[in-house]
Length: 351
Image 1 (tube, rainbow, N blue to C red):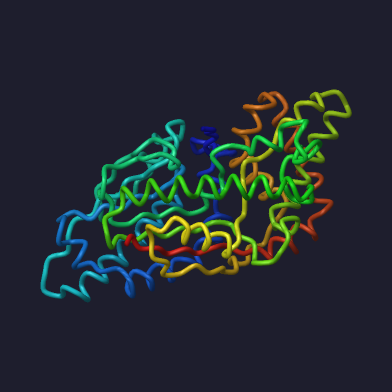
Image 2 (image 1 turned 30 degrees about the horizontal axis):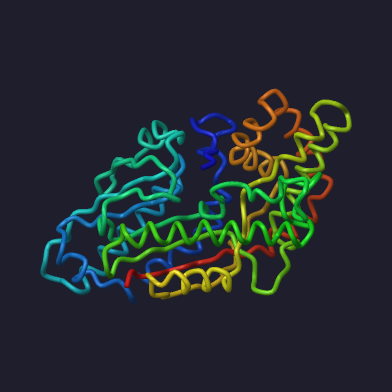
């Protein structure tokens, strides 16, 4: 199981300082979460078995986005409870923040909002495994985490495979076999994820997932982040040609991230069979003006760990300087693709 958390701490290259693109992209989901909780979550049923309502945020990273999301979920659940039980006392809430064990939980908990309306706890581990006791959770949330695969598809690193992805670091603009390998890995990972959550989520409990997406029928080569990954690959190949790194290192490096379509997600959930689909829909991202320096800083906050693990940390500054120059050169294309980006909003209830 691969583990490459976002940059910790609160320094210049930290995820804490460089995650407002993710916040802007997910803020459009806040009202949808409120709506689906109000319309589809039965608080009377959930409170019949527990006086404490437990919420898990899977792939929470180091904040501050997780705190904003959890505040929104708790407020929506309180609102629904008051609609159904206007004369009764609101139950207590516990939020369980989950990410890999190597996540910077110190920074996360040091920045917990003092006015939070819930008890907080950390749960280290991959969400591609069981994390909680049976029927323990009442609400599961995950935002911009499930596009990270459990591992890079083996076929794209195999010289003898038709999916070998030589000279590239992602499936965008690659051979069809490469995209097929990524799609198969995503489907396999999601099946494991859904099986684990089906055991942990109480009957009637809700799960909301928000992840980068691609519209149905649009080829993988058009994934909005693809331009960014192609520029990163180009920067790495330039460094290989100059002898700074070996080309074989580039050939054995592929980013384990995948943007699924709504159709793919629906088929996976239906095949799993443990959840009722309340909503699966694509949403346009909130428009965010992208300057190339901010884009570079955000990419570094998210990708420095996995790149350093493969190439070593000595190349990091030069690599991102090269990327920054290429991003400036192709800024019009980056902005055009970014504005066309979509994300998937998935709301499920446990049968």
